Image (tube, rainbow, N blue to C red; front, side):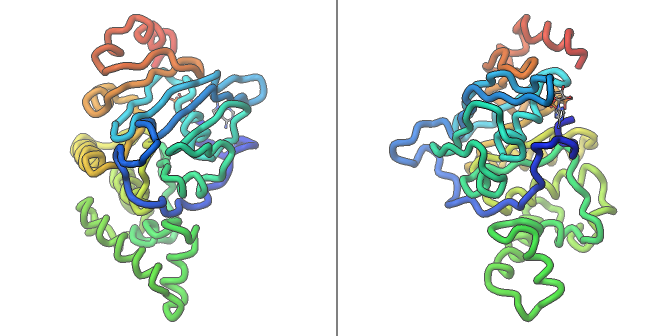
Length: 285
Ligand SMILES: Nc1ncnc2c1ncn2[C@@H]1O[C@H](COP(=O)(O)OP(=O)(O)OP(=O)(O)O)[C@@H](O)[C@H]1O
């Protein structure tokens, strides 16, 4: 899995800063509809090519699915786009800005944030505190100020706390706020991770397997939340092995195989594409 900590070029999460402005669907003069462009992206680990000249675009306002067999390079591409890995070649453009090689917090400032396959259960924190790690422009510090030096809490921390409370309520998980983040279920953690990512007000949110290991009731809740946030203007790119989930939610679908884009199209087109079927059978997913 590409979320592993042993990659020499992997960066630690430096917090998800505030995106500049809210979603602007088709409103930016001179910008086309591609909110994200991945152009000729390349990444190798030793002799292994994980991303092989991958090129695709994500249209503003879509929920785009990124699928492919195990090891196709999906998570690596997410890490390259969001600044957690440095590419060997190629470019990533967010909202018309070349963000290639930027740190994750800088990419977040340009409006793109990612979640992880396995959200980190933050030891010793309540869900509310976990929500406050890294939002806006105060990587990893705001919640500490809130709880260790109440006298120093400024307007921005109060605003973050208020936003965290609002988003937890919006996601109907405010009842979890005071629970230790280590005590909630994996599915609830995925909801918290999505809620937490929304604190950064991203224009583009990359979701890495949002329903892996999540029970059907919570998966339905996640699907509803993603649709709702998309209707409000957030563009989503979604890696998911649950084909029913991704085919129902996403359009278009981009198919990766061996680090390259094999094809892209509507769920119906992709589902009936022989090359996709062959890739999955060959990949053993
Ligand atoms: N940090 C890393 N160090 C070494 N090899 C890596 C690293 N991350 C990914 N790889 C390798 O790159 C290839 C692509 O992995 P990646 O996790 O991106 O695929 P994936 O499509 O997300 O797979 P899965 O669906 O199983 O999660 C794999 O062969 C993987 O072993």
